[in-house]
Image 1 (cartoon, rainbow, N blue to C red):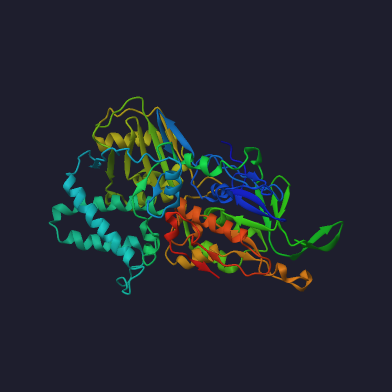
Image 2: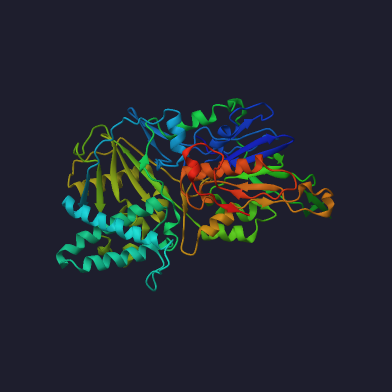
Length: 548
């Protein structure tokens, strides 16, 4: 799809005599003067933050009675009868996950489907494969080390002196563990630890686990039940939640360039004279678009990805965002995680093998090689997973992923073929007939994949980012009905302090923002809460967070 627009998703919805604009990246116009029985359901799709490849349109709002949303938030690749996700891959957890509940309620999950056995082989660069008991031994130790990192978040004890990152802590634990083994057993086990840490960078969304704050590792709440995939692809979940939104209300090609949210004086120079102009004279938020259109509304819900905010927050908002928000945006991490799909004419992997772990020995690299990402980027690919018999998936993160995005697909395919031939010790591994890779960092309306806790960041930064902007009352306003009115609410995965980086985190913050504005009363101070007290679904148990 063409890339048009400047924001991740936009929507605007009329409530009574006012309007709410949702800044996302695909527009959906909804006339709320009608009696719509499932208003929240219509809003939800617009409020997700979903990773998406090559399909970000930017919509902006139609004046006063518009909701904007994207039709293709979950892009898919078709391979035979399979749909392959380019963006969000799984529903993370079952108990209390609203995405799982939506999928179940609409028959999108086959609960009797028996998953295929997952057999992993770990291979060295010379093609030798390690015995599975060795892989299992190190994996179990690694999980234990990772859980200990998470415990610091709620515990009263402190990590060892000088240890501030997850990567440093696991490296210390691994060193102690390996020191108890005979020297000849240490090398291959260290390579497994290294591979698992590369995998963790893709899970977390960073370049190296040395960037992730140790004390905040446990701030992410993992819902129980494992990872669930949708047989018809993640995009299937959009149909039931968006069915009440008329398709003829979708607008595109309205890239946002400026959001004026507070009365202020600004100068205008013309014909050699300077005059003072006042913006927002009617108390409405003005959203200026790249196509020259200006749209006004009483409220805006901003779900711009953190990666976009990092690049545009200083200039897009007028007046500038408060210092505490800008500082939070700067401290939080928005890393890059990309996928590489390789499609073949025929199967070539052993039918019983579903994943090949790549045990790169980076200790043999020289300092010069380590510093040249162009020569080493592919060593960040930690495995290839079999999606179907003729389709493989590789994951890559951080600086290596950003470098990969600048290469041609032909070069990426050739490098991956060389890797497979080396680790499988098979010179006859075929060239793929197709190669497709994502490019989340290069996309102007994502600039990365999802949020992580950098060293020095904390849940307080996410809560600060989630706080709505409230219109300040001045004597010129006269009536105090406008005092404490929320003008911009924030939503998206980066605004949920426990479920950041997930679809359900984005969903819950979107629902919260909608409820905040729908329940707003003039002159009443509003608090943002991420609880779901009035819902009857399982997600209502999730602990709420109140931001005053």
